[in-house]
Image 1 (cartoon, one colour):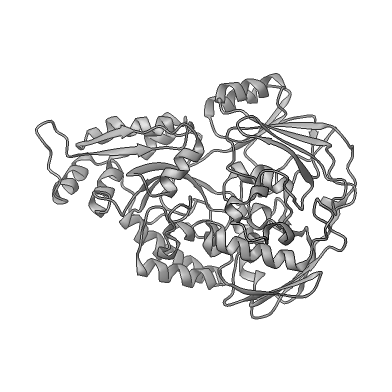
Image 2 (tube, rainbow, N blue to C red; image 1 turned 135 degrees about the vertical axis):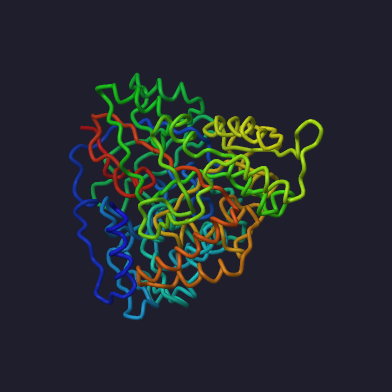
Length: 528
């Protein structure tokens, strides 16, 4: 499994003092063929195009084309140079020095310097929902224009990973340092000045995002393509038909079993689950623990005993998904399956609700709840809850959202009872797991933070210790204890992993199959 590879990397990453230099051949080699347009289908409209202040694939897919990061990763979890041509880490793991590529410029021609790196890290720390990602970075020194020195308050076993893909987009200080709130900055969506392989031509909400080749990209001969047209096709059937007919050349994060099996029959398309190693997607039912009756652990446990994970994975998802039993994906070196599993037990669920002081009324109902879901992908899960929870006396109202931003506003604003959600591990628990459970990350208005309002000092301490521990076995023990606690307290109920697939034309060379897949620069993609 790929997680074994990263386990070895995590053991040595912060302890190594040797110079980290990887060959530039993979990303710097000349394109086999230049030119052409890629038509890429996505299902959702992003709020904006700046990944430095916004998580999620809707922003990440275009954002990683518009903005470069210090590092990038290959398919084997090996860190590779990107804006940083080389880097080194001190013996004590408290200093990381980046040496930037000389001659790199933003899309407006201004040089990319160490000041921009320092500014970007500060912006991510202050605004991104992944608060733990750069929390150990105490300061960034800039001794010269091409050297950035990160000073850490504690070792950070996931720092290299956090400096890749959409996690650390390098944004221009001369644009975003003007005093505007970076989350609402007008240049996030129009007249955008990026640092990546492609430049923004037009962002038309609900329709398309058009990108054109950056002629002054700092990697010689790249990108291979002239243009990328990202078509926003919300209707699932329309998107699949467009792929089947060849009107669209690529789509990613597709998880519909019927759609995947249908497109596998198309001789002109490649359908693959590769490219999601660092994503680590989990589907779960989130509880608003700050709102009654969800504030009672027994109510959350009762709901868990009424939800059949095996029915979800085998019947609703036709065997394409794997059961998830905790906050860390199965296969990770930090996964612990020896936790409370909540096999379906309606009698136990009813007893828990009785004990919690919610007897059934004359109509058999104890209380009512509203369930939200990410549209449209989780609609079947939301509808499944209605008859299932009725069996234990809970009335369910399914509340549909017209689009993703509406759902995100509700859940991010803590305006929900329960909600289905899709959340990513992002390669390492420090990046993608801690954010959900740390009491210090309860941030109203920020989606994919601790939107459940969950607070447990013991969990806070365990995650703090695990986040600074560089020994894999010691980290495993800490995360094992953490998983036992949250599996008992259930701020969320994990049901399954997602069977994401990428579909692309067989006429495309160098498809995005690294650990970040399409959430990484498509600068090497070309038409054969």
